[in-house]
Image (cartoon, rainbow, N blue to C red; front, side, top):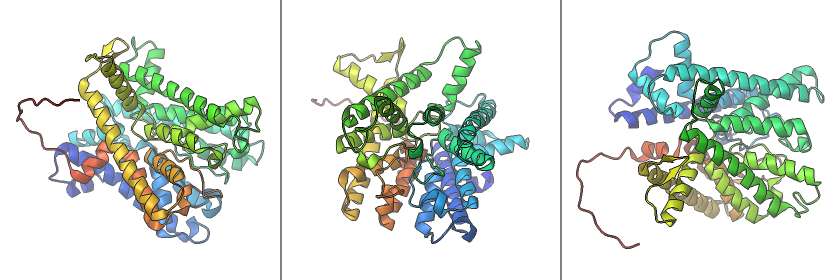
Length: 455
């Protein structure tokens, strides 16, 4: 498989080539997944090509937007295909291929390491294979632990065999921040269930933190690491603040809304806001109907969805660290200081400028896509924007089509294809997607004289 990819992209600059290989790995994964879902024994009733592509993309890009009712419109075989796409897509197709090669004791070259580094968002080349093995072990432990807890809970309502399958499916879906559910109403039937409201969000959070952060926390707990890195601290603080801020906004704007939280008890409101806030950024599970939210809440939700999870994890979006760096940069600029720092560590100006660039480019893509969808579909603007940001952030929450499907189900084939591109873009990253489209900028040694611009 590596040989095939390299022969296709031979001649491109190294970094550009590696990005294109990762991009094509997702395209191929989506294509294979769509083909398998189109098989007669994989779905019930009619399944168009665009709906098969949409479902495969949503699963492979761990989004959760649906234009077909997963438990009804797909067979058990179809569910296995969707779950496989979620698992492979959450880790990254090239990562999975590389891991299998390592298990077969196949010797991998420098190019293979570069591709793996790009797929995992790993900061360097040293120890990357050992890191990959730890990642797989962590995934198995976390997903099986979640599956056990969820299976025991579902066993109360269904036979043991079904409970085990439902537990495994939802654990993998949650850890990979996918949001796919085997319940037509997603998790709305478990709104007051404490086990579900703790287990699912925790799996989502763990998967969205990033493998580097999880490994570092583990090493720190085992005393093999004396200091937590600036990256890990920034991820933990930004993730915590975003969850709390999301809860506060939802509770303040929906507390008295009779269509959403207004008729619930105080405890139910807090649980619903907690569950929604966690899933706002990274996963598509829901215990409340987002179509009942007012437009102000939906608009705030777009900010959280665009942010997404953290680098090197299973979530998409611009990443929590990008938002954190941008906020820190703005804060120090407003204070008239040119030495931004956090946790007693200076920050590289280039990283802050890159964070600004990512936010700008992401906003541009979202703006253009929203305008195109709004003009072509002629639907509710805020809900269209909400759906666009949900796709880009590979989140999956939606205001719905009036039934159990996502708002995208109301779109034309062209509109659905637009959402497919957004999901793919959000999964591989803004810069990576842009490199695939326009190529890498040519490096130059020329330095021009400085020009003065009044701001």
